[in-house]
Length: 341
Image (tube, rainbow, N blue to C red):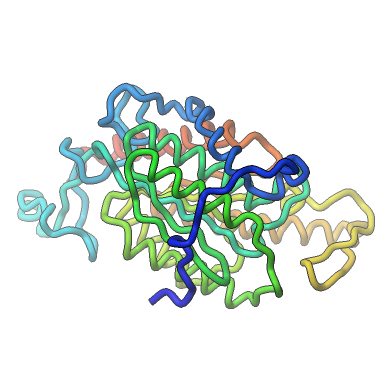
């Protein structure tokens, strides 16, 4: 059972306050998330029919699920629906295989949005939490435009909001309201690393239980404080669903600022970052690179999409480029193994 309270039933729409511009980039505003619908054309997801899934454009989607158009057979994995067994291939290979179909209309799309303490940080343009909300809004509107059902989980160290996938405007608007309502929350104390890691794992566990095989899942996070069990769960998600990770980072996390002394704080403790030493700068760079590469390699090992999103760069443009690369990679992989039983 999820140990945090679920606040979804108490949420209500909010209006953008007059002083919103003072906090732009620091807080998420509902008006901005609604306006994000104008950016979905950049994803190549214009509606032609209601049949093809997200990123389909005028072609078939690179993402597969439980539709009516048979695509290929793959080896059975624990947890798969036995009703989709491909008995002919199973008999021919002496190994259990499953039929995979090209996804059709009203596919469940889940937005798993990290709202933990570390996401409320940024030095240029926007906090990571704001960039995550903007990206989730664009992806949600694109899914809505394709006729898919939108749901998800927004989680932190103290609570979570779980949204069942819904079709129509109700699905996307429930997500936007959650993202906007949570933006003004404050942290009474700095969460412990183990608490932060546990919240990540529990959110993944909820998605594993809630998502049906073939769902499309977007995971938006900076991937700080996650343990081995969370990594294993992510691989399990990739085995049964189409998963795309959005690795969100701030420029100062990737590259140390110019030589100098910089006061830093986590909201409670205070310190000074000294960047005069080349060794300090290199260790700083290496710490980010290791986290970045760990997530990228883990995703690639299971065919999970990986899209980096920098807070100081244009979110729609980054989504367009990143998702096109994910689609191209998956299309190439599928065409390369289509004839292999």
